[in-house]
Image (cartoon, rainbow, N blue to C red):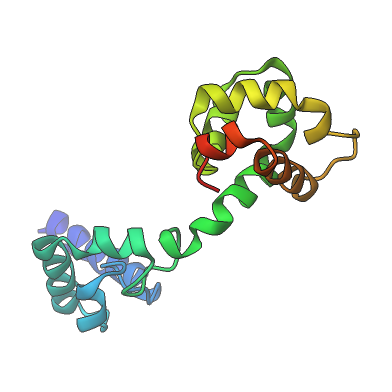
Length: 158
């Protein structure tokens, strides 16, 4: 009996913490749009709707149905954010002409990896004209260099 009482106290205590968050547990997607209340039955229906129709994956990819992070809508900024976060690593890898981050930037730029890496190495001084080159400056230089090179313009979809 004592054990059951402690279990009940623990469950009620945990439930009160879970309720305090006030967040929609189903996340985003059609289910979260249709069943907005944070009652357990609504959240179960929301999660079931999302899982049954597979719309949450679509919503995350496109940034619709209440999904605000990621998505195609924000893909234009992915390259800027990536470059700002990884500029010094990119600088080292581009000097070497290869690397994981350079390959990722090639993909974000719509470029084929091998030609992009070779191009970055051969144009390193243009892309990084000084030690104080910012990520914004770097992307401007990169886009200009790719645009002025016919073979790179074909290898990239900028």
